[in-house]
Length: 535
Ligand code: CU
Ligand code: CU
Image 1 (cartoon, protein in one colour):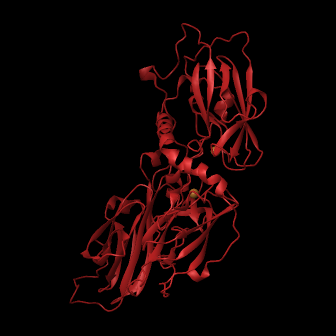
Image 2 (cartoon, protein in one colour; image 1 turned 45 degrees about the horizontal axis):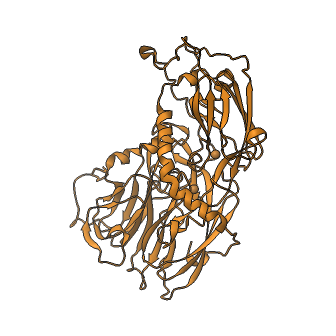
Image 3 (cartoon, helix red, strand yellow; image 1 turned 90 degrees about the vertical axis):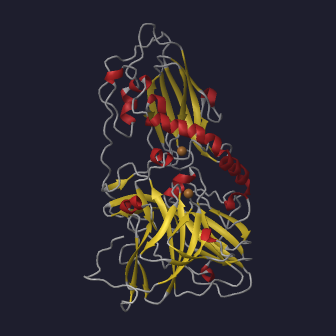
């Protein structure tokens, strides 16, 4: 896409929600502590007594395998004469404060935001979740091990029902990634006592700790999955003009079922359907009228933070965009450089790891030196529940993301994405090659290296206003950062783009650069075929 192809699009006002989102984004550090505690809790493999005592109805609703053998020492509760069923109804709301929340419907909790629900030990608690906004949600009481499972139909309802076996305060949440942090969390307060003499069951019994069932096999790979790999030559050309202008940029956030590896599929989040998102290319001093549309089929809100922007959130404060919606803001590119952009909607690392990143090149006043070939490559990580190499449809794993334990490392969206004949980089002997290389991450820096080549010039950290480093083997690129490297290709053959943290090569991180032309025996020669791609 060239800058000339940017189309003006209709836009909507977004100012009213901006302040709220500022508070969400900046308040996320606080809720993150809460969230980490949640994840730590959910990783504890041994269910609590309360979980074991959840009624059969509730256990049947668990999305993953639940223990099938109730422990011998189940909790005996005081079934007080007034034990009854406590019925509550909660509705999901997007908008307001907090930006996502659960609102009480009917009875004493009517209209309350994230109301505190109450029950006595021995009561049956029945909570109906109404999907009020048509986005993906669930209702989960982690300590009781009950969940409605995720659903997205507007006005659809699901019910969880369980016996309140333990006194205390328990949280209820929506456990769709990011939603608890964004405000979908409240309390269930259970009063009363467990009958004296009955000890809590199960997980304090030492040697009799319950066996954790193995993760169920994944669903089959989705047959309609598409390639999300952006071809590394798919980018706008150099900017020829020497005057600043005002231009319109229009981008769409699209959730796509894509091919992660051979026989393995994944639900990606993208800008414009490919990873990385489209390269934007402007000149320093240009003013950009930016419109972000969120595809109507999206299940999540999305946004954009461009590191080339000077202003709060890099644009994220104005672009939190619900499915089917559009937002607009304007910025002036006052610093040249190569900048990362990414989605900044909680959980931000979830959206980034799912593929929401790209580069914006802000050319200096006099443009960039001329080269023969330009390429656009970005690195990221994918956190799947199943191990690297498992065939089937992979699900995102929030716990692995929090612990920074990715299964896949990817260039341009897929394992081996730039090694295929369709998407490999290609050049001819004697040409000068430039690679714009960025790291979306969200968590892993890159030791970017091309096996068999030396970078003649490295614009370290993508700073374009100083002198480049010369004659560099490997360049460190931070997450949310980039580099511009240039080198002349002198010898024909296949070169391999890697992160020199080479374990990642074995988790999908590789790209090929094929150089065609006459052999150059004065620079490189040997015996045999020269086919082995050793390092
Ligand atoms: Cu939710
Ligand atoms: Cu997003």
